[in-house]
Image 1 (cartoon, one colour):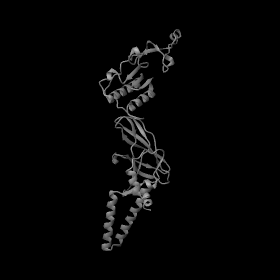
Image 2: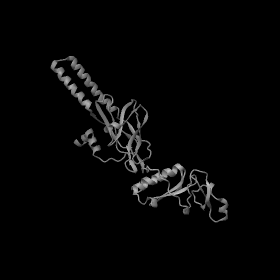
Image 3: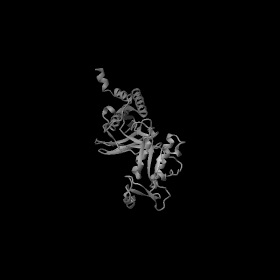
Image 4: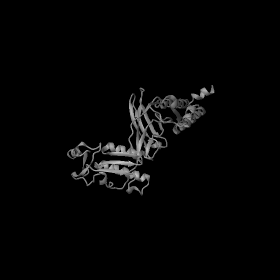
Length: 329
């Protein structure tokens, strides 16, 4: 009998949640009554003490209007507890979108708040575990609407950044009580290595490997021929020269548009740098190559990204740099 009573008590549920190591919650999270906790705030305790003093004074001096005022304010305080709880209960939370960031930047996890009730919800504050509640995201959710709230979280290390446990609280309408709940949607962001701050030139191309030489932004000039690879553009295939031989050949040009480069973790220019410094410099080169329209590839120990260009190549290279030697993905 005692176990059954404890099972449905708020204190039991709170302690069970607080001391347990929670895994991220997939899907839609609904704040049922057992997940919402209510306690008086500092203002609420002060308000209760003031009511007690007013009640003692009314009894001592037999003040009829004092009784009326005391019980009227007490009734307002009790009703505010219900409204505070109702402002948070049965709210539905689900995961939204999140974008990758560089290490040291702040990732913004977009949480979807769905109000399935017929009443509006006001002054909902969201903040991650360990964050300052003063910097919480405060939002209102109209009745029958879905609102997106962005929760910031700083990326301290490269790799996957798992969303921490989020506290959702409200003190509406009078601030006398605080209702809160804990949720942890299954969301994570990818933190890329932070690029070098210095303006570094791109690594020197290797003509012996078939790489083109980047000579600037001028017009493309014919440089030579090399063996064809499946990722080459058909516009650069030397059809006449290929017809005279057994293997297809590709035209190589000088100039920014057709330059090809390999960014190697084991390159001589990176030998004096530690692992994180190498990844930061490779990240810098990837960003510069994408900006200048260079066709490039990436070589890491055990990983090789083929030659390519554009945003897709940038995303793939940055992903490999972020997850390099960080354990399971």
